Length: 364
Ligand code: PMP
Image 1 (cartoon, rainbow, N blue to C red):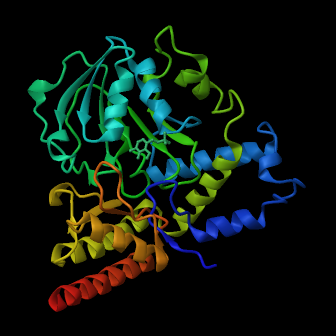
Image 2: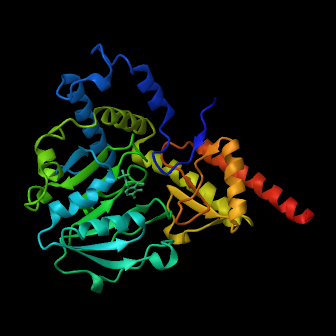
Image 3: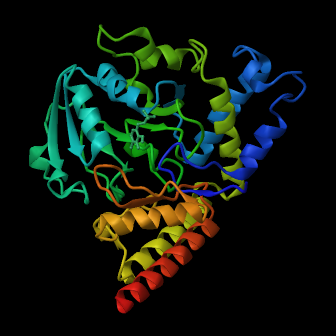
């Protein structure tokens, strides 16, 4: 069987050269005589992997010196608890409710204090980024939380809120796909399984002064200081996932880094949105000004047609196009590793499907 074009929102497709390199090194890594999976996390070979991974991520994201980079377990969802546990002093934070993941961050923060929702787009199924009114911000908030890109609804923040509290961003579905000015944030966290590796691994980029002030009830494993002090080696980290992440970082450097891939990502998104905007059958669901360049949800307006489209697309090797159950329809996730050829194939397929549907209509 051939490899398909996988439009999954995550775990998502990985660059083929990364998978091929990993396959080549699967049983024998360098001069170690074993697989990366079998290496001690304290071994020289693995220490080199994790240190190079950090160095690469720092250079790709242009992370300032006064930030720590942590490679943690528990996915991005664990950060919904780690952030309040570590940043709460007044036990209060502000949130912008832009989707299911923001809702989960809010719900979890409430376990430790209060979560003030400054704005929400729930009234229109999270299809836009709400305008923020600074008079709604809490003057004593310990942090201000946003989901930079909303994976399910295909929206992204194009303007960062101007806040005095440390800005915390869930960047799971946008990290490394476009330039982000790290210095504007207190914490940026992202699950790996969309833009840099296998699920389970989460990268946390945190300003140093925010470390070491966790609430007394914070479990040791949930304290940023534990991991910052030990270079993410307090316990056994997800070694193989970190190795794959580093292969993705190396691949990304070959693509011209974040600036290089951002260009390709913009081209891919323009191609797909350009088609959607002119289509008489398919329609994008996110508000134009807030559209994500990573996740593109769209519908035909008929559940039956959506289903038939997904079925035919799957048969043509364009898979995982089903939208999230709360929006329905379709969603094409076009992360860094989705080649432009995949998007071209998808658009061609949609064009053909549309023409066929219109012919069918004309005949009936
Ligand atoms: N935040 C966002 C924006 C996501 O898209 C996801 C996963 N789809 C998560 C958080 C949760 O990530 P994880 O499954 O790694 O906990």
